[in-house]
Image 1 (tube, rainbow, N blue to C red):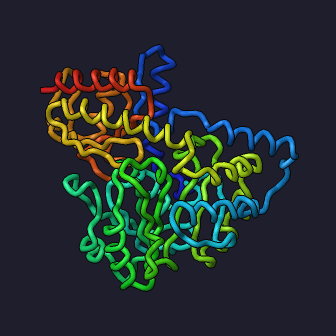
Image 2 (image 1 turned 90 degrees about the vertical axis):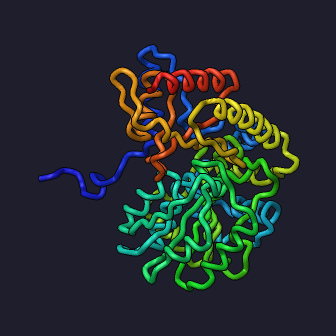
Amino acid sequence: MEILSNRILNMAESETLAMTAKARELKAQGKDVISLSIGEPDFNTPEVVKDAAKKAIDDNFTHYPPVPGYPDLREAICTKFKRDNNLDFKPEQIVVSTGAKQSIYQVVQCLVNPGDEVIIPTPFWVSYKEIVRVAEGKCVYVKTKLENDFKVTPQQLEEAITPRTKLIMFSSPSNPTGMLYTKDELRAIADVVAKHDNVFVMADEIYEHINFVGGHESIAQFENVRDRVITVNGVAKGFAMTGWRIGFIAAPTVIAKACNKLQGQVTSATCSIAQKATVCAMLLDPKSSKDIIDMRNIFMQRRDMVYKLLCDIPGLKVRLPQGAFYFFPDVSSYYGKSHGEYKINNSTDLAMYLLNEANVATVMGSAFGDDSCIRLSYATSEDLLREALRRIKEALLRLN
């Protein structure tokens, strides 16, 4: 008799975390591995936020908070949405969780019944598909094109929607591509969704503040779909607070209450100290906060440098990302080539070749639903990025 449940046996491990773990193993063996696999800013949390956490400890915020989050935090999140996105929410529409990943999981659990279809444009963040599968939903993948900046079109969405469609999931700025949707593009998507009363949208906006083209646009701004949009965000990426584990949703009240109910049985409230630190983070204006502006500017400098280096590698197809801190180049011109014992047939082969031959950790595109690409994170120093790209270029040129 099998000890473990089918649910866990059928679940895939997070490929991004798996590649990061492999890189750490090689480092522990003494290999000089440069990791471009992890989605984590290489910056420290702003001092003012850390000070707020220290004060929370001194003020004895060390007891159970309310399940959906402290009232002042949910008020601060509402203030953030109004200031940054011109969106009006009430505190009862906000649920604070232990990271945006938990927020997404709870939204799917509260909306999706077995057999319901969830439309996911590819490429997508790795955990979307497994989160849907755990809810026994059916993933409906809509393939986007590099030439269209990996963005789904209204026509593609319309063709994918069926009477079984319950949810559409996407991120903007995107992990893994770094692309983002414009206001007009989101309006066109909203107009498609508005025609289908039973279809909801989950907009993952965790990279909102790492945006190189101007103001961030939220699909929740459109009146014709506002009551069917769940916006997911958090502090991990834009505030360099990955370890604080704070994510949140802004949702129609009925969905927020459902997520609160589920969270009450799973984790209850998230860390009280991290919540008090997040109140401070939410009140930082991204248009004037030096910490946020400096981090974004440094990411943009790295993006421009990496773009030039990638464009100098023969055979790669590269688009200039507009946000986040990833590149998602098409590497399929190297498929069918080999070097020594390595034969490259797909993105997994190529990622493992680069890890073992060049000592550079990337993530295979198949993890994100597009096997023609690999993902590289530029959330590390310029010196390491230059060396990593030098190694990648040399390793690729050895393939024939």
